[in-house]
Image 1 (spheres, rainbow over the protein chains, first blue to last red):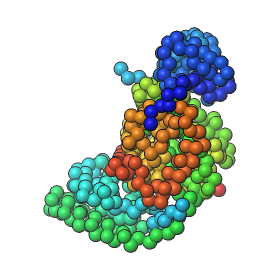
Image 2: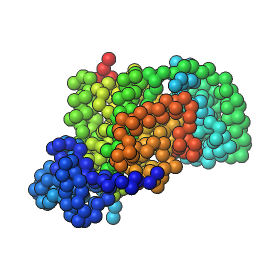
Image 3: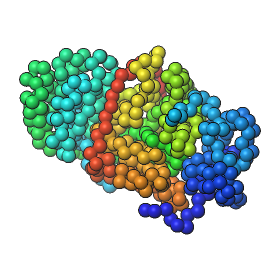
Image 4: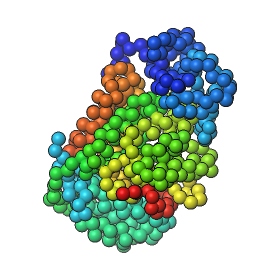
Length: 99
Length: 397
């Protein structure tokens, strides 16, 4: 079944304390994505399932998703930026990347 | 829905009545595969252990799977010079009341004669199994395992929480539900420990995850594939939190190691990371190695969550594949049993899809083929490991 045409997607914040939210569709840079009662201007293109900063994050701040830390920032991250392996790192084990 | 199970001599109940053809070293794999091939569509499955060196863990897993309640009869295929303790395995199967035969290729005239003799046994066994006693089976008789494979960021949003709901339902109805992947719980150890029914069990759960983290640190990286990052997961602990959702929210009744059968209903963690110093390589080299361990713990069926789109099934324990990602479902729908990605597109709720999983469990237990069964998937992989026995706090009464 194709995706419903009226489905616009949003940023899904999984817990109130999260500083990232998940894209439920692909967003392009410059899109304005709905979140809860508001909206966020998307800075980088993000694919579905990827994370976007919904609060300003300082270098070494914890990244919070599901209400739990999922790693730490390795540089400052602005609201609307894609949050991924290029700007956060694990507090446990290094992430294995394809070369 | 009434489930008619297959009653075994030990009182356990199966949802399938398979004839197993098992090779005991890679050198016997071809012969075993050829024996099983003509019967693939009618209830015969191929399993085996490739190694020539002895391993107590592999002995135990093979013994548990050959006497699994979904199994009715077993043909063992040995080359002859390997170290596998084949007589001990044959004797354990015989004692379980199952028809068993062992063919040793070196003593049996070679490839052609062994294939012919093996096929004769399988034909006879399939006929004999038509008389296996049936029995009424309740949800409380079921053991269900879960795993996620080919995870992406949608796994932790849709399919895994859906499995968590099904797990809560199973536990509430007296079934045993087993989650695993201690290497994919790194970051969840504190919360995990807090759900244990005793503080001593909580310490065991915590330590199992610490052991997994240490093990992976020595090996150089965690249980994290490049496809996980393509799918939006950035760190091991993020992947873990998503994987952890499969366990639902009931208290944790015990911890198992591969081959331990849950003593009663409840929620169990299966510790899949070997004990002692790091040896033999990665704990589970691919998803099916974990499915095999769940099967060895008696799992009648497996709930398999996938985001990127795994197509695998499993030998012995039918696999219900729950697709987390709506785009993956549009690409690979023919390989999926349940479309949980609808949740992400507001086309279904977690509770609705959770109910679909429960219905699928009941249907599969009643004999309906899952998608991977119908497509002929029978993946099986068993490698070297070593474990110490369970500690006394792992299964509190």
